[in-house]
Amino acid sequence: MSVITVERKVLEKNDQIAQKNREKFKSKNLFVMNFVSSPGSGKTSLIEKTIEHSQGKIKIGVIEGDVQTSLDAERVNKLNVPVVQIVTNGGCHLEANLVRDAYQNIENENFEVLIIENVGNLVCPSNYDLGEDIKVVILSTTEGDDKPLKYPAMFRNASVLIINKIDLIPYVNCNLEEMKKNALSINPELKIFEVSCKTNQGIDEWVNWISDRIKG
Amino acid sequence: MHELSIAQEILSIVKASLPEPDSKVTAIRLKIGQLSGVLVDSLKFSFEAITSQTEFENSKLEVIEIPIKIKCNDCAKVSIISEPIFLCPKCNSFNVQLLEGRELEIVEIEIEDNKEEK
Image (tube, rainbow over all chains, first blue to last red; front, side):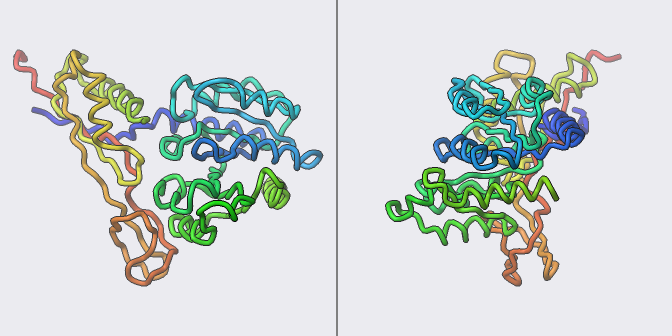
């Protein structure tokens, strides 16, 4: 029996490509956000609202990740921004090489913020660096206030938490204060926005925050 | 359910680390942190599935599970916490840094010595 020391990260190949993506994005002066959430929390709606409310202020490009269909890219495409769809065909998360290849399709377009919409899943995407500047986790009030405690890795790795569907608070069994407390117990540095993509509550504040980030 | 793609990455790193292409791997030792998002049973199942009836059929995945270790930035206390609530057990501060718990690494592999070697 002999033992061979390996000491290698299992996802090193992904990490290396992500690092190359990061360098490329930096050379293009892009601010890159990776949107993660469970399915149906409102990632695509938030992207639509972010684009609508940043008209004339911020130029946005979008990479849409989905398990099947290009429905989301079609929605975003109506807003006349550069958009490219990745279909993972069953894959539960985006990987850095998929983002690298997708980005080539919109590389020459003019935008300063890139939003990558990950596959709806609060587990797997937390392991895969895509080369983004920040992860933005979206959580809707219908999902319940305990989710940060159940998916700690995702909340720990995110910089921003967007609580969506805030207009439904009177109708659902979700304690907003408890949700925020749980999220901050996992990650005290989370910047939290409360928004509704239905009533537009909080959207301008969120857009202003992005605007400050790219000017800062 | 990304354990299957993780199992495939493990296999490709192991293959690339072999001294000889036909070395027989008996064990693969991994470090997996409690916050890595990887379910060990599911990873083992996936690994068995992709190595079944191959030269890696008898290669065992041995997992060293790494608990969540934090260090308090206020009182400097290092603690191991069982739940991922990032609170210093000594001074109740949330201002803590994660030292360990996110690992997903191949530490070493064990191979059978070639008996025909002269």
